[in-house]
Image (cartoon, rainbow, N blue to C red; front, top):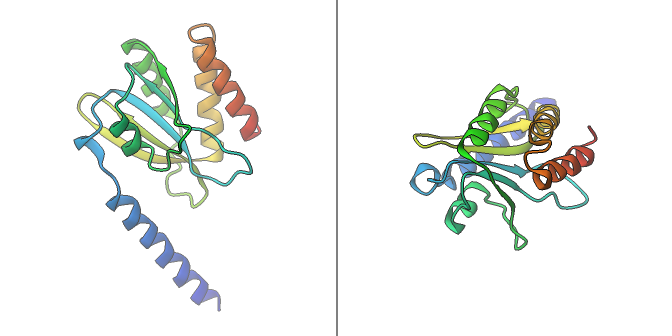
Length: 156
């Protein structure tokens, strides 16, 4: 019975990976330098996506990077190029727990020459959002407050 459960689990993971890859629109659509965060875990209340970008992404970019985007959209925060580079560095230094079956956030990093998509588990997400909250302190009070709320919701 355990063997059957393991086989079913592996098949479901493979199907999910194929579906995930087949819906990915990637670099053909994503051009605006940005970092997209989308909650993919389970929650009793919605957790809206957060986008940090150098300019407002086009609607097609939002739909591509945030496949579960609902009618309320995402919270988009426009920052300067230096701040986005610092955000990229914080994201890159976050422990990438993409192999975890308990991924909580999908993260898409769009740079001028590349697009990278990965997943973060709850622990890595909490640390990353706490670091981003500290970084944006007085730079962007609205973004800091959104990150503060998110960190509280995640139980950090």
